Image (tube, each protein chain N blue to C red):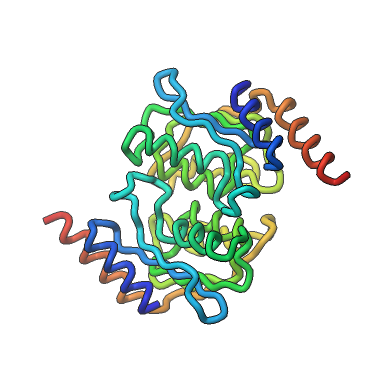
Length: 143
Length: 143
């Protein structure tokens, strides 16, 4: 998660909302990404979605079995949907997102028994550090 | 919707689950796409998500204001999340999806008041034609 926070900081330096994601398989990072919405003008360019696309390209399979996704903010509905579609078995996130979190806060799309895949969730890892990074980013943007 | 079904058929000819999406602004199509998951090995390559990325690239803005998304199958959680993120005001879909539909069937992510954007939904347009296309695709794949 420290590395995901570092990736998030790299995004902030480019004016992107500081969220970082890393996908690991067998201890090896398959993909690292930060948000890119402002730079790319792509509404789907969240850190998690970019990391999922990169990791799938890296393994040559749309199924990301035996992987863990680390992300510094609770994933939104789009990203949770993508995590389920990619069959990612485990997600570890830092801060919760009261405005859009779909991994336990507003929704829990990762563990809905009606969908064809469920995900183990660990939350709160370095949450305070991630929250402070986001708060400081938005505070600086307002001034 | 007839054009979206035609795009879906083009996908089926390539071995992709036949779902087609078109995004219109001021009567002009900004983007057309069918599923590409099998060809690209990208788990996020649903017709709607690809169309959203293409349309945003076409207008140079992540906000797809004043657009309508036509899609031949009810969008999944990922695609509904992307529709909300892109601020698409109107979605028209053909068949409902009892296994993963997130625009009224399993969830209604497009009209959740806790999110920062809500979407007008019209459903059932050419639904039978879309259902038959999907059924015939899966029947042919099994044989």
